[in-house]
Amino acid sequence: MKPGARCLPPHITTIPAIPIRMKTALAAFLTCSGSLHAQQGDGDPASCPEHESQLGAPMETVRYLADDALGGRFPGTAGERCAGEFIAAMFAALRLEPAGEDGYFQELPLASATQPHAPPGQGRNVLGLLRGADPGLIETVVVVGAHYDHLGLGEFASTGEAGEIHNGADDNASGVAAILAAARGLAAGPRPARSVLFIAFTGEELGLIGSSWYANHPAFPLERTVAMVNLDMVGRLEDGDMIVYGMGTAPEWREIVPAANGGLDIPLAYEESGFGPSDHTSFYANEIPVLHFFTNVHGDYHRHTDDAEKIDEEGLGRVARLTENVVRRVANRSERMAVIPGVGERTESPRGSGAWLGTVPDFTPVDSGVLLAGVTAGSPAEGGGLERGDILIGLGTYDVADLQGFTDALAAYRPGDEVTLRYLRDGEARETTVRLGDRADRPQ
Image 1: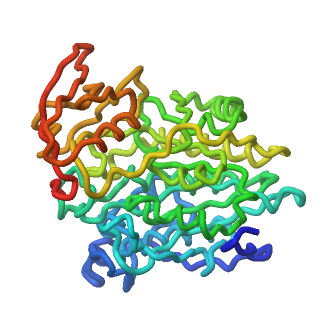
Image 2: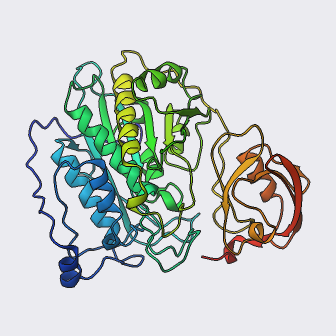
């Protein structure tokens, strides 16, 4: 057992149901309790909005988590704690075993030496365990995860208007909804051979704080964790591809994922890398095979307009079924998957000080360069005339072949440097000159 790991709770055949109140009018809740637009550090809600059912459909989960009453779920706030209570109640209703140090909760410090926007105080991961059916495999787990925090009032990392509630329906209420739906399907049986650990992470938006903490304080020793499936922004499938990252982290994925998609016919775009700006990175850094499901960025990414009515309900249901199918296939394998370490380059988050351009990447694969989903208002990129759909292929004296190349090129310059950007628009090569901004002074 690795340092910091602990034994799981003993098998629980019955879990007392957590009382779940029927939903009352939201207006009455706000009148009696006030909204939960709590600021950083205000993490003790007097009461939380009520919800309709123990085992709601995915869209019920999205609507609850993305309601204005939760104030955008910034880590450490009252609204985020209500979101955690809701997820724990759903785990209990599904008869998942508590796998945290305090029931379903794993507490962790939010303060981060690398993230000045992280609030003081404690955050909570939420852990629920579905015990495996095979006595010889029950002590090994497949982890299924999604972060449940978001940007609160957008005072950090928003591409929209600070001071407005950023509900994060797609980012990442959709991912939480999908893992709950997958948990429901797996719990309904037949029970998989290996155990499945469902984790809702806090602090992802602040730099993978929750998943990093879990990786250093696992409920199961990491050597017994056979794979991790992460869902982040899976609510906008519509007519596009779902991007599947991590396909190069184990050879078995090439068989498992297409087979799991049989009958669902989700258009899938495969990416090899096991590293990326979401919670799967914390597991792949520990040489655990990973997948990361992602239906791509959009114009509401990190904006106050990412609301529940824009979620593709049918598509979200299909993603949840794909997740269930993939996890079942992995958990029923008698042999462990063969991890391939080091696929893709681990990049540090661009948050913090340094040169700032203000591009928003679109993660749809392109032959070369970085496809843009948009640019931040007031940014050097906007001033230089870059637009959604442009493909950035050069920054200063550097060629940009991919997102890693862009990160490396930007890191070579300082705020205030004047650089030439080379890009493609509708296949035509163009150039523009911009003066790089300071990330610390960018619009919030």
